[in-house]
Length: 397
Length: 148
Image 1 (cartoon, each protein chain N blue to C red):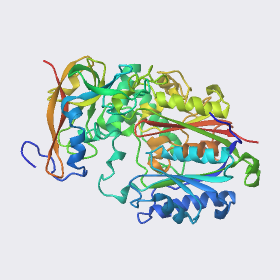
Image 2 (cartoon, rainbow over the protein chains, first blue to last red):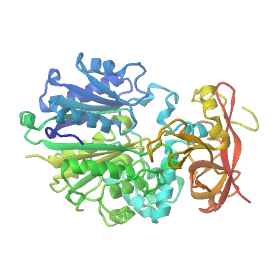
Image 3 (tube, rainbow over the protein chains, first blue to last red):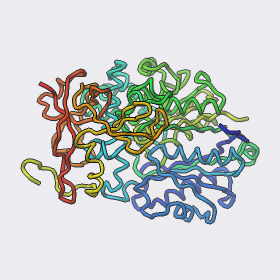
Image 4 (spheres, chains in turn blue, purple):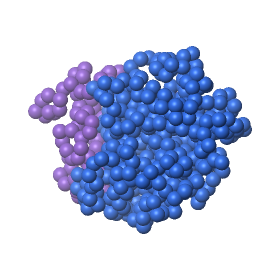
């Protein structure tokens, strides 16, 4: 690793609410969060040095997304780094933004994501449905099937009861009723018994809801200038790692960091967490609050284990002992998780975790506010854990 | 559509036959690759790619085993998205560990009682007619059946 020239601070951010107007284009969505995030901290558009932006590969039909995005945001001729790397690609955008500031090349960078999947009414870009399309999607297997298989394997390997998954989903719904930005915010609270049911309907209830079109933005600045924009900045660090895209290769992949593990662990997430914690100077026991990207409740528990919140195979114990609640030493998914906040895809799956931890640490989380957390960690993944991203936010001065 | 394959003829996906052609050896016969430098075997094949284990570029064709055992089973009762498989639910999907240690995710075919399939069950590869593309071409590839 090279030399880090300065710390990176998060001073604000924004995400679109659920239920965006059907006639909004991706350009409107991107401009909405960009404008709102900058206005929140009083930064003029002209002062932004760089935008790093992840997008859903079905959102933009044009062959050159960089200038399209720069044009929509009104920053031409300044650069945009366009990224199309699945749901957690907005974590890669954050990584790019972080590097631009940590290196000293840029002072103010906006990291973004947006998704407008319904721009196509066909699965033209079916690479968003498969990990390794020659040997999964084209043989009838999608990354949703991957998720179901991983959950089945994890349950089998670690004897995870349905009750743990049901409790996970229940707690996510509880938080979502206290988060106006969540898809499930105004809907009736489900019964725990429904969420624990051993039926196809119960299984669906333990999986993520779809957020639809969504966009998010984070405003990152150098530590030396953060005081100009806020009196509540937080330090921000991020790291990511790749794993083999084909599901069979999650079994003892022949590289040192992964070969001890199989489909029952998120080994790529462990790699990303190790690097993120090292950069941030923290250890798992320092963490006060966690947000994970959970398309299934089981993947949420696996993420807790990979992040070091509990030992491998003990996610179920953490959940069943009340570890997710506000009274816990480390509450989990206070934003509502993928299950009740909604799966934001390329638009927000990583950045919403960062934003929630930012709101928690700066005391802006309202009814779901945890007890003065100082260190928050979040994780996200794309194309079924072939990409895993970890973000760390820490209270500043 | 036909009586034997009652799936919709026009698919959502529009891949060309060329794409299918390039991967035919792996899909028809489970041809993988082996690194001649370190001996590591791979599926999907890594033809002309770099070995992640030893970082050499010396792959040769490798015939994967056609038999193995079930590691884990999952039932797909949603059939999402509709790629031509949604008419036969639930689909029985499995992680299979071949006898040479390669892991695959596959459809288990001709399963009379999906709930009865257990880890450790012996399976063998079969060539199956998967679906029909927009071009009209039939797509073939591997599937697995339980050994008697």
